[in-house]
Amino acid sequence: MLRAAQECFAVRGYEGTTVREIARTAGVDAALVHYYFGSKREVFAAAISDALRPGEIGPAVLGGGPEGIGERMLRAFLEQWSSRERREPMLAVIRSAFSHEEAAVQLRHFVTTEVLGILVRAIPRPDAAVRATLVGSQLIGLIMVRYIVRVEPLASADTETLVRLFAPVVQRFLTEDLGTEAV
Amino acid sequence: MLRAAQECFAVRGYEGTTVREIARTAGVDAALVHYYFGSKREVFAAAISDALRPGEIGPAVLGGGPEGIGERMLRAFLEQWSSRERREPMLAVIRSAFSHEEAAVQLRHFVTTEVLGILVRAIPRPDAAVRATLVGSQLIGLIMVRYIVRVEPLASADTETLVRLFAPVVQRFLTEDLGTEAV
Image (cartoon, rainbow over all chains, first blue to last red; front, side, top):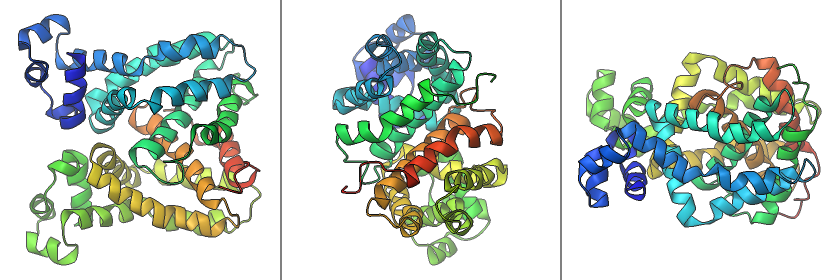
């Protein structure tokens, strides 16, 4: 059902998608979708969680200590995005959130509690929240340029090039002094 | 008519907008919109150009030489985005491009020829194109996190804080050795 939901959100956007259509696409009764998830908002929240899976990145990246964390994070992130099967659902929820406020609220809630939550717990600093959003801003910008607007040469750069270019930025945001300890 | 077009794209998205509706919103005949712009694609291209205005940022930022260019660019960029009147049309074209492929193609064309063109002409280096897309990725990511998904603390950080956090990244992308001279 989540695959069907992601497909609907991808094709019709958040506004154009109904629980009924999700059910039809999944080949089940709408009552079943309501039973498992509830409203469209809740289906979307589940679709976000299933698409982004921040837990996959967490342990390997954050468990290794501060040295090289920027590079490890870039590699894990690009690995997630390099698979078309993983990428499509992520693009679907991101596109929906960018075009509809209710979807943006759901994504914000998920990013704040889950994605940034994992980062904040892993960064033992008082400015962990600002560091986490800085990293998020660079990674989401990379996704926009590479996979959504697809501007060259970033769109077809290989993993090693991207790691070389972006890992120092992520490393800096996570570990260097930003003058934000008091934020 | 461009204001009307931006309003339509903002409210209904790229797909949901027709030349007829743009004309109705502007209070003119659809034939007039066709006469001035042509098809919906061409209206959208004009709306992008009117919204983003890279020429406003160009001279002041790029004319001052490499030292402090990151900070000047951040300030000019944040200045554009701090005005609600300027921000709404920019968000409209960005949102449209993120949710519809034809709109993304238009935005890509504009970004590649106009926005990156200005940067590339101003950076006397063989890897100017990759540097320009790197800067673009960081700035668009900042916009996403701050104005679209609105994740705190970035969403309500003040200009000085944002300059302090992002200017070094932009400066590095524009002027430091990235190992990409051969790209």
